[in-house]
Length: 114
Picture (tube, rainbow, N blue to C red):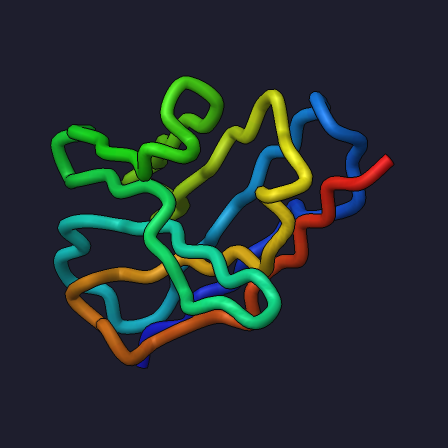
């Protein structure tokens, strides 16, 4: 059984920064990619950033140049550095392992507001 625990969210002013973490634990034999999603109130969950086992990355157009995804394979942890935050970045952020598509953590709330 795989468990995902997100952390690092909070309230930040526009233009500020946050660093999210997602720790994966459990019966993990071969994690390939890790993904950050977000879901804003009344909206569908959307993919924010993606990183492969070889550190290839991809980002949603809305966060390119502002967000950076990284990983620590030894710790089965993925990070999301978020800079120049905007009010529209407000959402609950979740990580996911595509190898375990039905496993989700509790998410971490990010609120960008003055």
